[in-house]
Image (cartoon, rainbow, N blue to C red; front, side, top):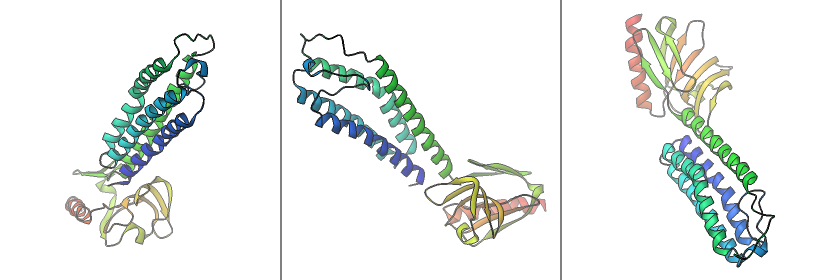
Length: 264
C-alpha cells in the first residue's frame, strides 16, 4: 500500500466527517432541518418534526457512508476510490435533492401555505459551488500524491535516458560523466533540504534538493531504500535513483551500464 492510497483514503474520510456532522446536527435539531444553506423550513410546515429530522439525518448518514466506502476502496485502488468519490459528490447531489424533496413532501402539512420559504435557488447555487470546489480540491490532492508517490519510469535509448513522471527529465548520454551503484540509502548519503521538489508522507523524494554532503542534486528515490544509483553529469546536478524494491534498482543499474559502457 503506497502513501497515495493512504492520502486518498484520508481525504475521503475527512470529507465524510462534514456530512456525518450534518447528519448528527439533523438528528439532534429541535426545529425542522433545512436542506440548502440559506433556506429555512418552518415548524408549521412539518407534521412530525422528530421523524422528519431523523429521515434527514439518515439521508446524510448514507451520503457520508458512501464517502467512507470510497476511502476504504482507495486503500486498495486510488482510481477506484476517486471514481466513487466523484460519483458520490457530483451526481450524488442530484440524488440528495430528489430524496430530500420526497422526505419534505412526506412530512409536509399540505394545508400550510407561506410566502417566506423555499426560495432555494441562491442556496442551491452556493451549495453546488462548494461541492464542486470540494471535488476539485480532492481530485487535485489525490492526483498530486498519486503522481508523487508513483515510482519513476526510466526509458533507455541509444543516445539518452528519459526519466518519466513528476520532475522527470531527459539526460543525454554525452553529458554523463559516470554511473555508479552506491550501497547506501539516500538518507545515509545525505538528503539535505528540498529546494523545488516533492516529499510525501512516506520516504518518496523527487525533484531538486541541496545538501552539504552532495551539493545540488536531483532525486528520484525512496529515502530509506538501498542501493542507490548515482548518475554524475558534467556541469549539471547529479541524479540519484532508487526503487523501493532493491532488485529493481539493481536491474536498472545493469541496463544503464550496458548502454553507458557501449558509449564510452
